[in-house]
Amino acid sequence: MTDQADTFYKNLPSFRDFDQVGDLAAYQPVPDDWVVLAADIVQSRKAMADGKSKEVNLVGAGVIASVVNVLDRDRIPFIFGGDGAMILVPGADAAVGGQALAGMAQLARDQQGLTLRTAAIPLKVLRERGTDVRLRKYELNPGNYLAMAIGGGLDLADEILKSPENAETFAIDTTAPPVPDLTGLSCRWEQLPSEHGRIVSLIVRPTKGAGEEQVLTDIRKELRRLIGQDVFSDEEEGRFIFPRRLRFRFPPSGLGREIRLVGASRGRLKTALGSVFECLAFLYAYTTGRTVGPLQPARYLDEICRQTDHRKLDDSLRLVLDMSAGQVAALRVYLEQARDRGALSFGLHEADTAMMTCFVSDLSAGQHLHFIDGHGGGLSAAATAMNSAA
Image 1 (tube, rainbow, N blue to C red):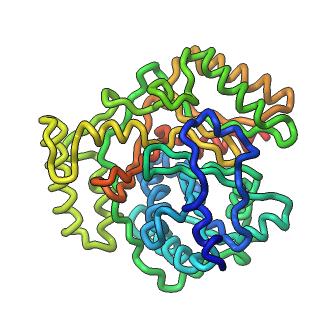
Image 2 (cartoon, helix red, strand yellow; image 1 turned 135 degrees about the vertical axis):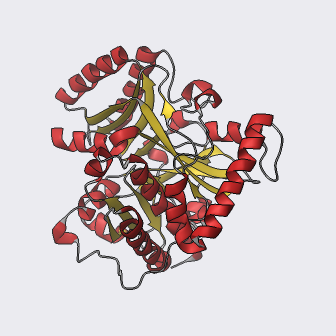
């Protein structure tokens, strides 16, 4: 593997305006020797119905943390899917990343009672089967990026992951995997309430050859017409998180879940003591506005509002939105008509609240990302609805 291939994502030019996400000609092919590390939770909908929505999201984000923490954060593109993730790694890093993923699967099973299926799928295989993976790098804030992907390859990777006949071919070695390093993973914010009545997790997949760029443009225009704001904007109207929406309490309701997972590698007592101290320090900073160590509360809250993954493109457009019941009904009508014309397929899930799972790499440098999903199913439920209607 060449150094150029190894640093493909790190050197990939970034774009700052999400409204450029539909410029499909700007996406660049992932090097041929790269590998997709894919993971998702088996029967995640049942787990959520049993009250484990936060556990599902925490494990999904843990998939990303486990791999990124053993590889270079700036080199590794990833996409959070609610109940799992897709991570792309250079071929030379596939074994190490795969072992981290295997460790995460064992931890999810032992600590949360969740079965995490995993696969390592070479890019060559995806291309041999008629798809591709092309990427762009969306800059949320300096040093914080989200991968955007097109080409159908990640959709195919998801099919392979869930296909029993492919399980052995692309299996990851699970013999004595290491305990994953989940440093930076946390779930300390309470559920995020809807301000308009419904939290909508929406997935829209443009039909190949049906004018994908135009479909994305039309979706943007329709959402702007329905809710009176441009959700593709990088100004405040395009954000999902605002300081007024954030809820923090002591102790956080998700702290025990966090300690069980993160503490597996660091020791649970040490993790618990450290987490409680961090929560108290944050509560003091949050309520007084004073700086505590690397935590500058006003700056941190502003960064949170900017550094979320509530909108992304990974073969499908994925959005988490706050809408009224009437707006949701009108959106369904529009999407159903577009589906009937053959322009797209879609899935939509509604909830009263959203959830946020955090991954903090370096607080002082502002390097932290926040994964957003609808409560009780969210993106995974929307994906199920889309596939059921296909």
